[in-house]
Length: 326
Image 1: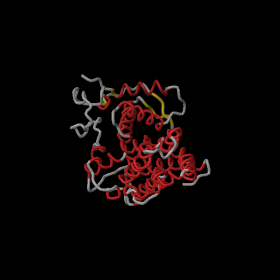
Image 2: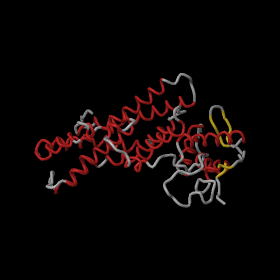
Image 3: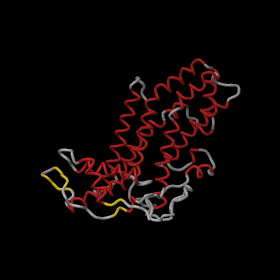
Image 4: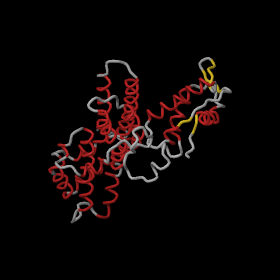
């Protein structure tokens, strides 16, 4: 039988972590529990982890394990009871449900290990037509990154005769394309599949997307900031090579005319991750404005907007460090 973490063990962990702290407030305790649950529960979302953390805090307050002291909190002698089934050894009710990792979602819709996404790469491989005909702006963004990787990077690698001198090709590819795959990976893993599953699960009326974006931006933030920090140098390396290498100049023109490029130049694809991050804030703000009534989802969506906007500001600052404007 799987061992499960109960409220009392959560209380003991929090107490060992924060008992010596002065001026203790609820928010840091909730943040600590959220990080614990995100770490321990496979495939848990930010929203699920925060909800579980809130329940633990409420249980501790009710049992007297936490006590109010004016506007502060302090630990009390109470012992909360209850079992957190999500914290079983492998995050599953069944001892056999996840012995084999096959990539498919669990049959139990409430399972905390349910991946809740399509097999995205398999789906994209079966499609026909160019990227401009794919529905959804997020899919178009994925195709922009595919263009950057296949029409440009992979074509330079396989070019015969070489377009860029073999002695400097590896360094060139690293300078220009080195940060692309991580951006694509975090969106393929944490954003597009979840959005598609939410549409399939709840469409045509979606109850909310704030949990998806909050989970994604916390996992994707570093990838986008790294890409933005590398952008000025990547842009410089491309323009320098273009100015002195006629073969490369012709390559860029041919790539622009490739049907997958949709007649758009290389610079469009190079700055796509940066401009895309800016558009997420606009997209989410538009959704937020359309929500007439106040609700928990509206509050959580504003939090998602703030987190995405903060990451966007950091990316813009990284780009501007070298005086390059996107």
